Length: 126
Image (cartoon, rainbow, N blue to C red; front, side, top):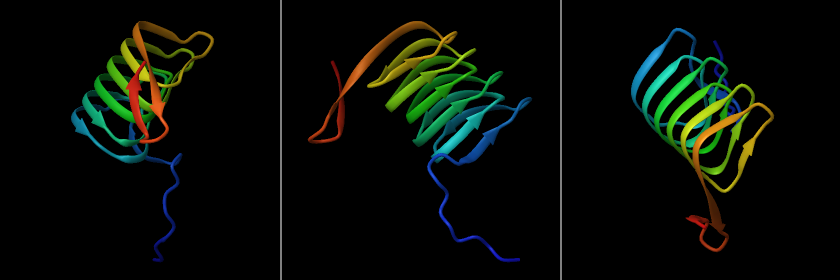
């Protein structure tokens, strides 16, 4: 059987926590992980997190981009952006330079808008 040698793209889902699954602990990854089940713990990744409708993530998260259509509880920091899409809901604190709340999305908590320092690519609170 031949193996593919092409690299995985940044938007391609490389990890999946499906409905009915419950995972607890520490998660790190590159590229994109989608959660449609439950994850409780810490996520620190250089990729994207997608919490699908019906999914639950509870804990502390640091990622490039987070897209929430399920429920997130805790603290989330995204280097690029956080999107809350219907019927998504965040309960907690969001730290990001770009926060997008779509029609029907809910943020219950606080947000800190970060400013990117173009010289050093460092994010600092404004």
